[in-house]
Length: 396
Image (cartoon, rainbow, N blue to C red; front, side):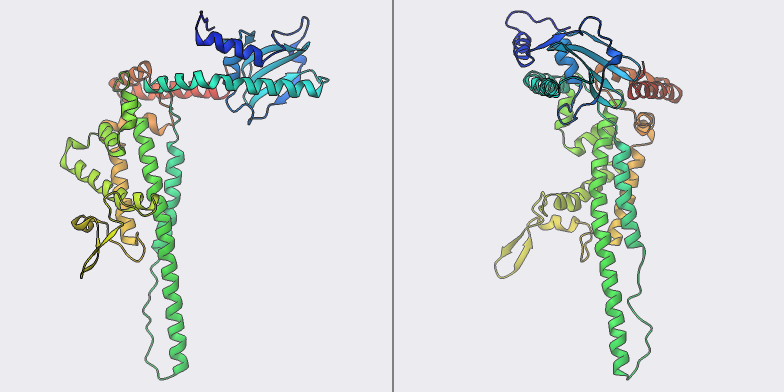
């Protein structure tokens, strides 16, 4: 339990919380059997982070508690106006148990007071959270499968749209029948419109694919930063977050190792600069390529001048089938780089969905596993998976 002293902000917090929770007392009435209390899940909108209830009532106010139990992570025991209440975090959410005949007005009051009191924690915990994150004392949820599924979904849509190439020329024999010529022209127009619609569909899907891939890439790099096992000194994680996406990528994957890798990174930058950034930022490119300055007696000239020739080939739509194929091949190369060689073993943690922790102890744990080779990494992955399953299933 936290033990504040004079002038400690926690002492002030405790006084304010006691005032907010007026009428709340620690423990249950004598003879009350908590197993006979019933209730149900509380409104998650009122208690979006149930763990704050534990911190407020146990650590700040000193209320009695227990846990973990069967499918229960923790329980807090309180009495309000002589009525018993148990606040619990269960497998299926935060619940408030009470007697079946508790007055509805009292129950509403208890829920309202408890929910309102949690706001008092925000100032002190917000500052603490920033300090912890800056020092790397955090866990990142591994959502690579979700990002990859989104990327694959749009890639498949684009592949499907670009996959069919209609024949816009027709083996139509010359004819002097004007009605036949009109019919042939209508058929050709219809096929051209279908081709244009497919190209538009391909562009929309491929653009979404590019955006999804860079989101996936940035998430993967964050995961790998922990799993490569390189220590993080105080402030290093915050500095890593402040780097640009390509600086983070170089930090993790060492693109300077050979010229081929450097070329790969350059191509990746081109795709981001020419496609992802303009589409994500209203058509504005970082180097002014979206703008055309007016040159007297000449006309409109791309503001990025000679750098314009470095742009990916464009069609009526910014992404054509050939661009899409090249981009997919590039993304496959980058993925292969991040899954093989020096990153093969760190990637095992990533692909098995392990949530990385960035504190020094956890990173040292990853490093020791990496030094032991594939079998040691597999063993740690299995151990971490079991730990997560027990936590997710509220087992103890």
